[in-house]
Length: 91
Image (cartoon, rainbow, N blue to C red; front, side, top):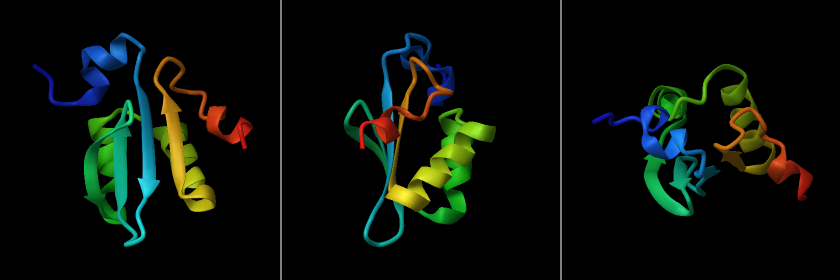
């Protein structure tokens, strides 16, 4: 059984929502379907976790980091992993 989200049945079934938020202490939390699955990720390891474990790399990772810098939060809809604008459009 895979331990990475990018290979998981949840990602393949296209029914997950991932949110990355910045905490007051400067670390990051990752929520899957509104349940926190990762806490206290340092900036140093954020790329490794988001890309390596959850499979959001390249332009997706750049968009996540941009949203985190601008808003302190990035939301990803895995039914459309390349569309990171849903949260931006609702503002």
